[in-house]
Image (cartoon, rainbow over all chains, first blue to last red; front, side, top):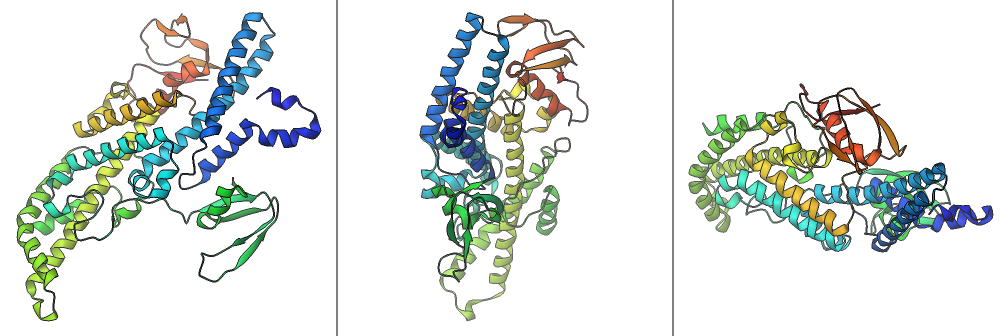
Amino acid sequence: MASSSDMGSADFESLSSTSDVELLKRAWRNEKAAPEILPYEGDLVERAKGQIELVEENIEAYVENGIDPLVVSLYQMDLDRTQFLLRSYLRVRLLKIEKFMFHSLKSEEAESRLSEQEKVFARRCADDLAKHFEESVLRKLPENYQSVLKQSLISEVDDMVPEPHLDTFVACRSKSHFTLNLYEEGESTQTEEMYRGDLYFIRYKIVKGAIESGKMDLI
Amino acid sequence: KLIAAARAVPRVNKKRRDRIGHVREKKILRAGRRATPNLSIASSLTRLSKNATRITISSRKWNKKGWMYSNRNADHYGALVHHLSLIRNKRCLMAYVHNRADIVRDLAWRVGLELLDLPPEIQDKLTTLEKEYFKNHSVAIKSYMGKVGIELNVDMVPPKDPYIKIRVVGEIDQGIVISDKTTNFTRHSMHFLKRTDAEPYIARVTSFTCCPSPKTNKLIRPL
């Protein structure tokens, strides 16, 4: 990771934009700003883990060889930063799962965005919380009202499931030139031209597709 | 009596909300959390509801099936009002329990995954059910961390320096081992530790300073 930055300056821009650290940073930023959980970057996480281990071994070797401690501490700093990125990325995802437990298990789309371990975690969390609710409140309510997901047996949909707010405003920047449909399909199609590097403050719902395909980045 | 109890339930809620379908984010009130007395209101309320509901439910079902304008009588409206108030009570109660569960989860992330790491003032305010929930949740988090192979509890703040200066403010048990060296944490001594080693102790300080009377054992304050 540190070595990727001592390439020639002409290639620096293009190289650094594809190095794993940059990709991880981009994924982390997107995840932090988005109101719902985004697709899991499994390969990226695996590669980052491998690189971190590699650099740790290097550092230990340097310390033993007695290389200048300043250089070693620089490598250590870089390693710490990358580790922080990785941990924070996973943490943000876990916190989002915790917040919207029942929703992520209910909808197919949300479930497909979780990694295997996250799915297990989500199921355990939901079970724990459902058990907690049942013990403290629902046991004592009359029969038709004992469901965690529905208000009563008469409700047709699961009303008691908190859902992520897709209407929140997010700041985003477009990476290339394209047109965006400002309204949902079916309604009036007012489009907006997005040029490269434009900054927008817009509702998340509208840019959702663009973010997933990589055309826009959240800030 | 039912109405009086129903009026008591929204007072139980810190922030009143009508629809639990969109649970909004709340500021966390650390010092002012009330404990179990509210649950007794809840259980008395539900006992009343149970008795009255048996009549209502049967009449409601009958009304749903054979609903015609001429079938509406006084009972139908009474049943409807009762049903709506029951649902509202259920929402209030669930919202209250849900919020407390959120606070419990937040504590687990901020302070530590062991129940005994929490300061005694907070432990007093948690019911046994919530302590159970805390334990179950920590186990779930630990198993996830184990599977992924990365500890997610450290590095809560982006790192600026690899080493930080700290001063010990409270008392700590002697002979704590940090990264192969035993350190002597006497009171008011200053140390130069690695960030990852000191973090769990610092986390305890930042969570305590919001409590009214911090009287805890392990305290380190970073300089």
